Image (cartoon, rainbow, N blue to C red; front, side, top):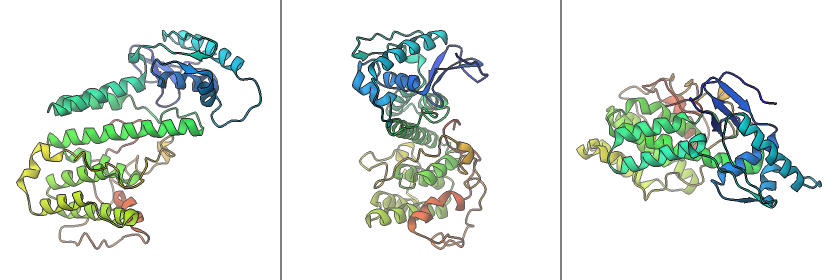
Amino acid sequence: MTGEIAVPGGARPVLRLFGPVEVSEREKRWSLGPPQERRLLVALVLAEGDTVGLAKIEEWVWDGVESERERSDAIHKLASNLRRSLRRAGIQVDLPGTGMAYRLIIDDDLVDVRRFRAHVKRAARLMAEGEEHLASQALADALGWCQGAPFASLPGPLIGGVRARIAREVQDARLLLSEAEIRQGRHRPQVAPLIGLLSEDPGNTQATWLLMHAYYREGRLDLVQQVQDRANAYAREETATDIQELRELGQRMFDKDPVLLNPESVVFPREVPPRYASTVTRVDRVDDPEDDPVSHGSAAAEEEAPQPGEDPAQPSAAPAGSARDTVINLGERVKTYHADTMYFGKQP
């Protein structure tokens, strides 16, 4: 039995994998059966039209759960129920099965993850062509589909791994948006999202690079120094070396190199790893942004910045602990110029 609950949505039914796996249309949404049925749907959607064999489907449907019972009959029943659930919710699909494999045929425009990826791909092409304004629009459209953590209600190691990969795609899209906006001179609104990202992913070299550029355009060399110092402190703890590219960028900023104000100078050097060492996106908290202080700007938007003339290398209220602790607390110690923050479910 399906339920209808008021929720913002589009004019057509859309299959949503961000947040709970469900279908939404305008002010309604439909649930799609028990967890096993939704896991089957996720496996088939992510296959992007390819055939998925029963063995692989079993891995998805019973992710991390041991069972001695015969599963092939259960999968056939789940596939039949899934067809009915989707059609009842207004999603037109074909779900042919051979008895040993299944394939989902669905319009890409009806799946939020596919729409997100299509917009990001278009934005990357526009950025390469120098069309930053259009790229920003495409990225805003892409991120508008990220309403919640992927498959938020479905636990399990296999689901968790894919959730982390999609979370990384969303993070990269947000970074690309920050790059596009800074290149257009709209650097101030990007400060808080970049600080929020670094609070979650302190080894993200690309976010550090962009934040340094944002502060440089504000004339805040003291904060440029802080950001650079924290990134290199983290890097030294991980690998005992600084990040040379950040050190060189900081020196050029203190030398007031006029070239750095050109839009193309913001472009992150692609030969540099965008994430330092083994840093990973933390997806264990994105299911519930209510518990995330970064999501609500309590740290990044409210704490006081160092005043001009203070020594940024000698913070007065630095917490005790490792260099990693110092970097993670970046968002708690630097005043931002914008109240918005970044997390799943909120547009930048």
